[in-house]
Amino acid sequence: MLAMGRIFSKLEELELRMGAVRALRILSRLMSYKEISRYTGLPPSTISRYITGKILPSLRQAWRILSSFLEVHDLVITSDKGGSVVKSPSYIELAVLLGKLALRVYNGTMFDAVTAVGVYACVAKRLAEDLGLRFISLSTPPLILEEPDICIPPKSNIFSVVFCVKRGEIKGVKEALIVADPLVRQMYSGFVEAAVLALRDLNIGAAILDYGCREGRETRSTSLSARSVCVPRLARRAAMTAVLNTEEKR
View 1 (tube, rainbow, N blue to C red):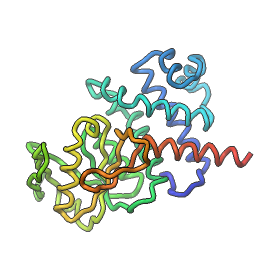
View 2: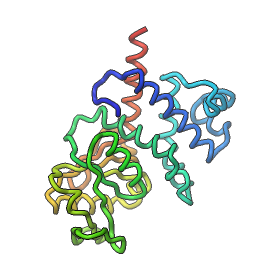
View 3: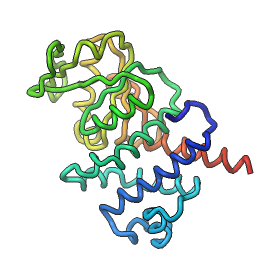
View 4: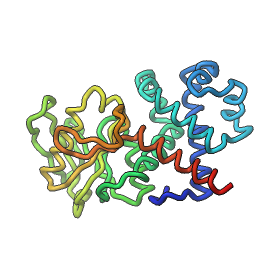
């Protein structure tokens, strides 16, 4: 788990460098080395050596690769028609890393639990495990959870979504983090806001871990005044912090 402080340990630095390799491997499933080179500015031969595990990128190169990956993240999601990329262990590990990086420099409310809207349930579960938080299964009919459960009727939103949760999972939860994938956040933002309303009906506050954020600001509020943590922006910032810390030590 990444600590919330500013200084990165050697293990955390290694996690960043390995994350960059995962990003390249994911991109290589969707584009050629020459195309990846255009995004990252790295020679195809260097990209090949990183992907095959012959060498690891430096921290600065890792930051460069992760930044490039975030720029084309929407393309990765929309090109993944069968969901094989998003469901792969490499992608889940990378998405969790980016989420933890963003939360590292987020100075907002602390959370008791993590849930997901969209295809990022696996990411949310792993993120909850790494952060030592509870995972809430937020489902919609006809996928009804095993009894006992609570179903929250829809509020005023264009989707009129009904959400169901397990009673035991929400016991004692005050603040939850909603993990929203880029496709849902960009195309179905009302669905995310419906989840915020559902949690509020259960007296649970909510913030959104926004993988689809494209604003220049670090965080932003939805129309419901829910805090939204911009993963692309804050993950880049946290990774650059690791680079600067390392270079200052030299």
